Image (tube, rainbow, N blue to C red; front, side):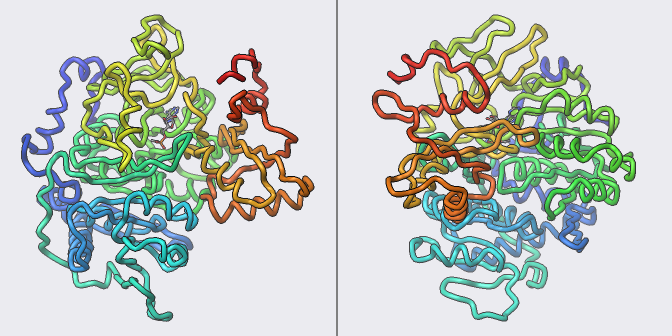
Length: 567
Ligand code: WTA
């Protein structure tokens, strides 16, 4: 049976209490995402249903039932508790997409601690900035990543425990390190789950801004309400679905819709922990008989590039519903997916801060390729004037996207940065920092970001972070980092630098600078290109004008520079 009611009907009857009722949650009750995603599903008679089908390199496979998820998350929670980890302590998950990451996430929540997932490809400096901001108490990681933690250990007196999930006993454990083997541990049947409340903190996700360090987006257990309902209605997950969310839980899609949404509905999900290739992805869909697939535009454009012949070599007939998030999904990609898979990818728009989907191509609604769709029921959205922050009621006129605060999964603050959090609101609206317009049928169309943040392949990169890394190199005098157009990733990172006297611009130096910053940045933030300049364009007050460099890359009119100079 489909979950789909018409969008109009849902809008008319909507109240978030629909989700509260389905989850048997009454205001004031305790609500713990860890319990909802495992114990409750077992209580509903699905203890033996497959929860996770995991595949790693070389085709190794592991399968866990909902009872396994319940036991493993209990066991991790209990292990952490015995280490002395307390309610609201931050526990970082720093792993590839291995089963321990998924169970660890729920275990941390069951204990009432705060899960801080970080992308495992981060280098030691990216890791350090985020652990430092969160004053993280423990980190759960793998052997292959532990050297990055060791490198910065001296600077982190607050980090008391480093938990290694695949310790083999070959090399001795070092200071603060402890081994934990999830599958071999004696499973804890009963763990006293923390009676967290709606407003108890749950997850801390780090996201990049234009200036300053990455911001820790604080979510609470009540986010479940929107994550559950959007998963049910937009991803349309049903009991017999086999679901695949391609996102890494280091990012919000990988937790909201790669753990919480599907498991709170008791859905079987698959995880492929290998790099991207069209061949391996199609093989995975065929082998696992994936029915619902939630992915991202860059992956879709890469699949387009790989061509249609490879599609014909696979049986992808299990697919019944496809959705996308993270960056603009161009019309061509929507049309192409309809042609080759018989289903169009439905675009959804949201962000780390919103915690759950905001604008969606609701199933059953007419698809307008290239549009982000309409506000999810319960979300009040508008396009606002950039100066007055009043709604623009003119069709097709660009402005800032604004959302009325109050949906359950909305972030509660930026960790230790309430000031920046407050700046996200104007005139009673939450501003996600994107520009769009609404057409005559109420569909939203993305225009661009309202800041200098670069969205490369769905990953937000702070130009400031890349510029800072470049400036640390001895030959670099000044730097400016902007987005450059790219066929597949939409945008890639491009750096402009001026050199200190005595340095010659050369390919060799570019390579040296690249190698230097590689150690500081995540691979996703690495510039594709460094261009040498004699001077960088600046305002009279000396601020570098990224906008001019950006316009140059995109072949746009630069406009009146005299006003910019007074910036
Ligand atoms: C962009 C990812 C166009 C946007 C869940 C947003 C999009 C930022 C779309 C959030 C979309 C996300 N169309 N742009 N459908 N979805 N974005 O925090 O700029 O990693 O503010 O969350 O990605 O990225 P974040």
